[in-house]
Image 1 (cartoon, rainbow, N blue to C red):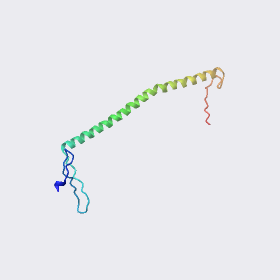
Image 2 (tube, helix red, strand yellow):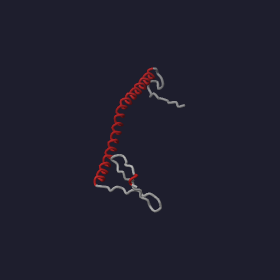
Image 3 (spheres, rainbow, N blue to C red):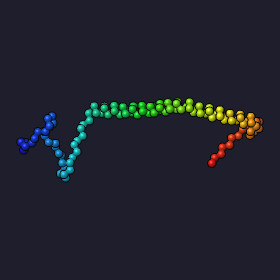
Length: 114
């Protein structure tokens, strides 16, 4: 029977694979390879590397949030200053013109919602 077997590609074992079957006709899974000390060490190093990566990613997100707030803070302060100056100018103009309050009382703002 070996005379009819054709050799496989070079560098490969020409013998056929072993099929291990149970009496019921089901295939058995091959045994997992034994874990050596190197496998355990690499597993721990890989877990530690994953932990460091997650911590660094969290710090990066926090740093980006701080930069984003730092960029928006001057815009918010500027918009608040413009709103304050606008309201101050309107109150000053209303008091000069003798509007509500007659110049002596506080000026009241009314917001009408629709």
